[in-house]
Length: 311
Image (cartoon, rainbow, N blue to C red; front, side, top):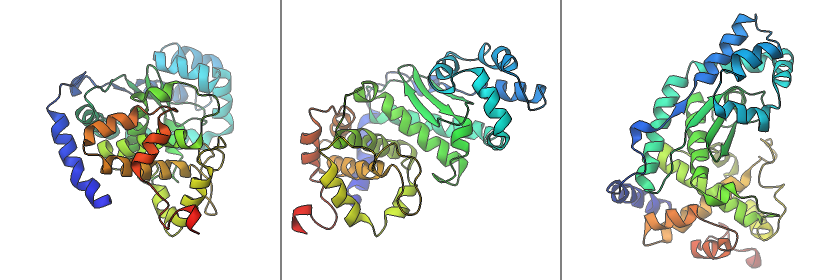
């Protein structure tokens, strides 16, 4: 199935390339000015900015995305100042990632351009890289994608290469912008539905950037596929996400966010089995709770070692 998928992808991109993009690649906006402003305030204060320093030099002078992110994730400049005081190593390491931003911007812009090729209906709101207080590496909003430099810079467990880590997560989050379901809160979504949302973003993110954001899960899951996939098959109709999604990094006993890995595999099977590959990608990204079971059935995905019933 994987070989068939790799054969089909160039064909999908070639066909989609003939379609008109909603925004040309030259207008893809990746904003990093908030990062420069943050470190300017940090340096001017000797590494110990007050909340007022941050309010004037960082927040008031910053982007709309920073103000929105402050409301939803940072909380206040008081909380950010407190984080800087108590976690100086977090922000010292973030500075090393800031130096990589020019290359990251270039690579990410090329990846997002490929999204416009693959999905002619794609929207292109801005990507904003900023500095938070370590509690959010990436978030999708109606106005675009926001990346927390300091949080992602310290997520070495995802991918060791800084550029890869940023580019693949930006691609993943940007695919969420294209998913109507990602912007709608569903009361008690099933594990299957939420896994298809995340798996679709992982799969299409790989198409445009070269790897899924959670590529580290491939190594850990080797040799564990049978037990994991059978467990997922048993859990998929339920609404308990805690073993599979949004449960942190985990450890070598059990990694977190394994639903991303399962969802990627289901998404890949779904597209590989479709005659119309580009249409299948569009349908995958448009998944909603009511069509998730039918999409899952069409993928013909099964646990690698056979169904639960065949144990």
